[in-house]
Length: 156
Image 1 (cartoon, rainbow, N blue to C red):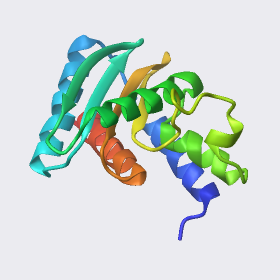
Image 2 (cartoon, rainbow, N blue to C red):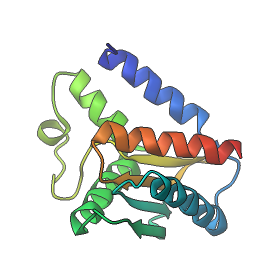
Image 3 (tube, one colour):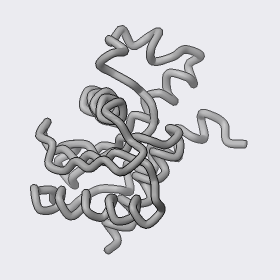
Image 4 (cartoon, helix red, strand yellow):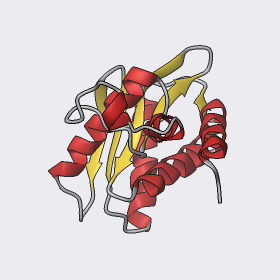
């Protein structure tokens, strides 16, 4: 079983590895289509979002999702925008300290959610410029799907 400390190291490694050489509107659309195709192939009930500098460049909601998934994406994206790390990493870091994001972040839980599923769009020599995420699965599965698809997209 993975400890929270080991999980934090794994999540940080993902962020150091999954970096774009550049990220523009066309890249965002292609990434969104990549996630959409994979989600459709697996019949996953997810909402997908790709943003750059606060602008939503791609959004799709597959069967089995609702407006609640849009709200989850927004809340998780705000966490990534604020902390510069994946929503799963931020939540895990709070838990590793024996607390919870909801109790100790001092942020409105109606606006922020440190649950897995949204990952920072990181550009080499620039840093975070946006977010890519899904909502609809358990948080670890949301995160794993995004990481898997980012790795495939960047390798392709």
